Amino acid sequence: MTQVAIDGPASSGKSSVGIRVAAVFGYGFLDTGLLYRAVTRAALDAGLLSSLSSQVAATGVPESDTLVQLAHLTDVDLESGSATIAVDGRHFETHELEGGDVERAVASIAAMPQVRAALRTVQREVAMRGGVVLAGRDIGTVVYPEALHKFYLDASAETRALRRAIQRGFPEGSDEHQEALRSLIARDAEDRNRAVAPLRAADDALLIATDSLTLDQVVDQIVVKVRASSHVA
Ligand code: C5P
Image: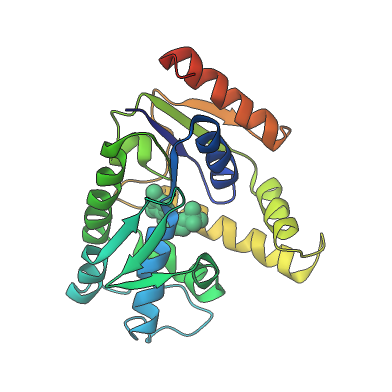
């Protein structure tokens, strides 16, 4: 069974592209960022990050046993095609994982080695079932390096921030747009510079610079490449 790995920085289009590629082949789709976001949401709600002011990221929060335990209690259900994420039996809707508090803290939670190890296990279980597209930061390098199809999407921070603002209904140049740009740059830096599984393209990934491409064009490139190298109909 086939696995398609799509990595790249925040808002590079991995999910929008991944969902459509998965639909073309009748595969499941897992946005692995939701796992890190769910652990972060659960940690915030449990008061584990309460030492932080709302403006400060979680840098410096130690990786406690309780945090690692939350990662071990994280579960994915892909049966319905789109993924449902639960932490310790609590199911999360996507909108619960998109708040500013999650956004500020998630990269620091994702830098924790034991949290990553626990979530890697969950992701590999999904990958090993096959017939799945996984989007993330380290799918092709660490989570499932044996994937036959690896892609790395990239675009400038400015392009990505504008896409994010438009997607969320904020006018170009608005405070929210500027905040999206700041937040992306900060998260990029944390994801690229962390010691464990930093964001980078796998040596054997096809790099796609999406700045001047439409969603359809990116999807087409991936579909053509997957068909060519695996004879998937
Ligand atoms: O993709 P998304 O922006 O939702 O990811 C949220 C955060 O989760 C990222 O900034 C990154 O820190 C972390 N992440 C990761 N590895 C993945 C997916 C996400 O470290 N495979």
